[in-house]
Image 1: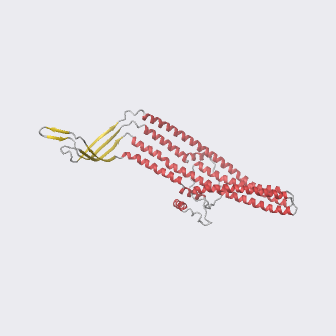
Image 2: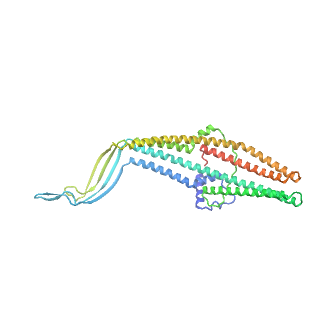
Image 3: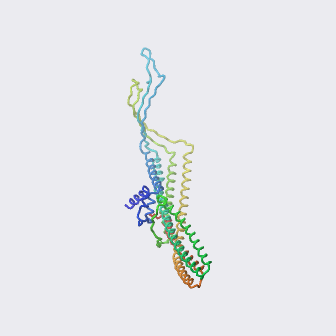
Length: 435
């Protein structure tokens, strides 16, 4: 039911691009909803699904060899000269009709081929088995792209809030500096220094806003919605603890990563191809049946009459120029290549798990430190403002404290974002399905 709702929502977004924008301000999209919408409407998923249909068709095509081959045909031929036979005192007789007409059906049924048909079916199934795993791989890649884009947008939007808060604080301090400069309490240097800090913060905000626009464009592309359409996202950087048992996660990844399943399917397909290649010199036994109508029978050559014939045919390959041997050698090499590919994928999967776990540990360890830095920077700014109003410290020291607080807040936000990214990287590394 949930899948049906998601498909309907995706169809609404595709067919009615204004649907998302027409939502009320309270409407929002969670990360789970974004993933479902992307998977329901992205062309790459449809393309992979078409690959499954094509694979099923190839299996059915290979099974058609078990059924008889039936064909219908007809011909009309005019002969000249017509061979005649002259018998003295009896006359001249035509041996064949001037016009020959024939129509009929031809049927061929392979009775025995010593495993070639079954081998072809097994090969088609082995090659097609990876199509479903390819769908999972495409869906997994798109899902984690959507997750990454979703949280990148959230991170940059919150970064803008931090930048705006810093700019607002600097402008308030600038107003105080100007007031104190006009009264002679401080010099114009303090005002100029603050103006430089404001300009720097505004420039940094422009960079963050540009990054946000780029990530929103990427998210709209995944969702398939028009440019400039609002993205009412809702979510937070949930700091959920994650188990860090490397060995068990590695075994889980080797068992369920789509890449591993595809590699193993490649091995199975190569082995099936090797078996089929080895059957090239096997004989085949078939049954042939023809039935139809034609003229040219004695004694009335022009009368069309029914006819039929049946027989058994045997084909025994004798010499093929070494083609079967070469095909077997090629298939053996493909089996070896497939096995090595599986080993390579397994190494990369294990490395992905270890790297994602290392990043997650580092992000987890930084969380407490970043929170403490914000608290310390906030306290330091309060003390600096108090001392500045008392005339104990300079304006520059207050600006430094404000900058340190903004940087600490950004660092905390960046650390939370990195933790969430690392957590999803672990899920990707072990082959979890985020849908």
